[in-house]
Image 1 (cartoon, rainbow, N blue to C red):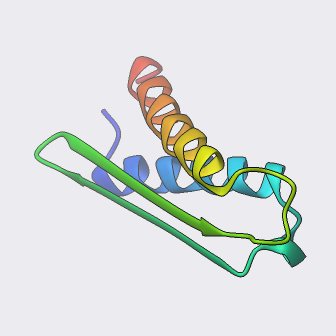
Image 2: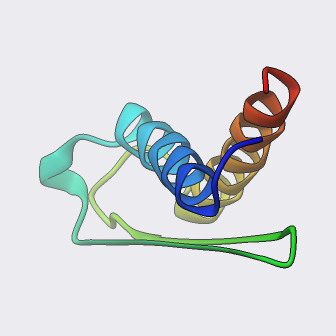
Length: 79
């Protein structure tokens, strides 16, 4: 069974990877990935501000949050 820290780290990395795959670092003015895992409840909040980027910020943030949840599901499935 993964630890709470492993869950949070896995989710955060997955979310950041999605954002960084859609935007160049130089296009990102602000990126905030907040992950909590308490009482077996995962909460992921992603905010990205990249006004010069080619992708839709809200869509990327939503996709990043979904990727984080998927990565945690995979983590538990492999445990």
